[in-house]
Length: 225
Ligand SMILES: [Zn+2]
Image 1 (tube, rainbow, N blue to C red):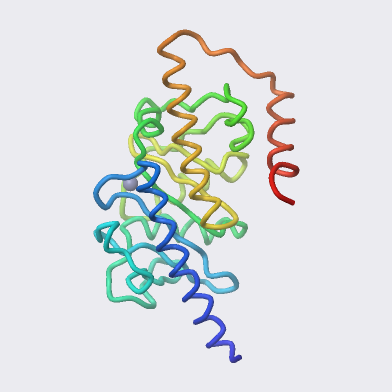
Image 2 (cartoon, rainbow, N blue to C red):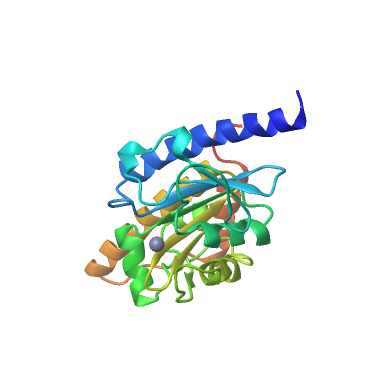
């Protein structure tokens, strides 16, 4: 197969995958209206696949996903890309290990972002998935790469795949788009449980050594080998 046919086949598969993953955002109640999106890097190419802007979740198809370069310029597609494309393109440019990015305004996680407060690591699931607190990123205006810079500055040296962008919402990263979606689901669940536990009293801390051990086991041993 020619190199051009090869990349077209990769893009076609990612259009399917990215489209299908959006159903998880609605399934877990992480989004309302058309807010929120999933993107994927096209491995080996300076390209990404992302949701079109302002299209209802029920109307998403593999064909209306948009392919952009890593500066957010549309390469393939009849629709404008998500308004978060520049931010996500910046993440792919700066963090080569990232294969997927997700953005939501999921309620409980965003409520922590509104207060500018990281979600403390007081659940074993938080230790597993995030390896510590879920950090807060800076306030940033939508439309240029300032959101992307805030995401990268916060996550570059963190074990957490999720950042709570102040007064805005959640961005998650992963080696695959599915992993980034999972982090977004887990982020909301952890934020919700810790919020509810706070209503009832103080949280009991988890020893940092235990957080390290839980995170290591979950990332390296847990699940199907
Ligand atoms: Zn947003």
